[in-house]
Image 1 (cartoon, helix red, strand yellow):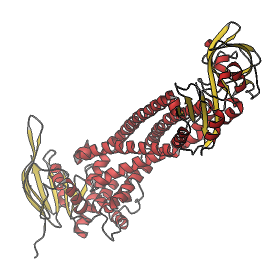
Image 2 (tube, rainbow over the protein chains, first blue to last red):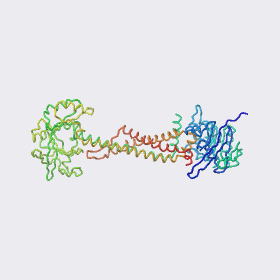
Image 3 (cartoon, rainbow over the protein chains, first blue to last red):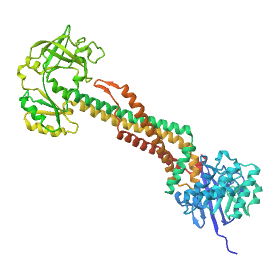
Image 4 (cartoon, chains in turn blue, cyan):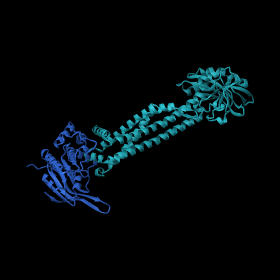
Length: 229
Length: 401
């Protein structure tokens, strides 16, 4: 059986916040790897460092120390412009609070990163429509975020995260603000994407029942890995 | 190209889907700033232009020849005038003699300079004959007749600037006594009163050359000064050089040199114009900066999201610059239309009144282009700075505050 490619290789990753009087370690020497095609759940109580870890992995923040290899490349010291390009090309990020651009329709929100990447010969508008179909919003492409429900907005955010066919989709508590039915719909959408499109997915959840959707699991406690399955 | 396309897309959607009230307010402020950028310089330019025109048309002509200290009178007018008239670019020539005098009417008296002129020649250079408010201008064969500027005559008009120092109630047809500087006294009938609206001219009095020679026979075929009108394209310095070759010992001056006060005033107005432009530029810049800063602060989260999903900072900056360009362009067009279609016609109907006459706003294509350029620069800088600050923030701080 062929060995799967490592998407992330994280070693001794530490993130400390200096509040002036006290130094708080949000992440304390965290080490783990994520392979291609995985669907990893990061769980833990509030304040355990889940979001901090995902932000380091999504290149939205820089660690205090440690190593973070993404697709074999050390990314902690990369200049901001290179990190932006990497986010655009290889990563899709889904925020807890959707983070859609209010002046754009669902369709425009989805195809904007595609437009920015501007791959030769790519029809990003068509692909955006396909992705919206895939997340079950084919009939709502022309709607603005405020005209969509929370679950629908989150699915638009997922479609947006996938527009440039990223190596990994990072979702920060995508169901935190959703009702049970919408949460189920969003999680099932991600499972479908993982199994059909082979997209590596890393998601955060504080709901233990979401474990059922994951192929592997990391539980954080006080910035350290407490459990790994 | 890709950056421009995305920036254009972001700018377009933010304009079409953004807060319409904010956009309207921004454009309105920019329109007011542009009107200010246009109004003050055009007023000053109109002021300078109007003053210069009055000076040339009623007081100095284009070129003035004066006698020197050694030769108080310029001799051989019968030879010199045709020679000057033969110089290319010269349109008209008029010799003048003058003498200080005191004028009396009833219990009022005032002093002035009385000029002996050839009316037909004067009419070719000056517009005084068209500015008569009472009576008529002189003819060459007029004797014992005088025309007075309104600031001398008063004409029963207490609204004029020098009324208190005038003869107050002299009208056309009245008899006045003129006491010349050489001691000769003579009664004159006021043939007309003129109001050129240029105060230095309206304090002058004119008699015909023949009349002047009758009280001062020494000036026959001589002049104390010569006024020259040139055509619009003439090179004054070349004409002055040619006149200088005709005879020695004369002072030949352009109208600007002759009336140094006007040059000083023009220079001062240019300085004021420059200062006001700098102030306007700062006002425009700060205004646009405040509006853009508030706008960008409100959009900081959007900027953070755009960065998080991989939109390059240069692209985000360009989007805001394109928005600023749109605001500046719309404001410039609206302000130009308002200025040309409303402000100018209204001001032309109700002009500003200055001691040298009505002043009309003067604006050209270059002024409009300059106002647009200034506004554009101020808008671009003002738009760039807050975006630059927002882009230097950490992405998460921008999104979550």
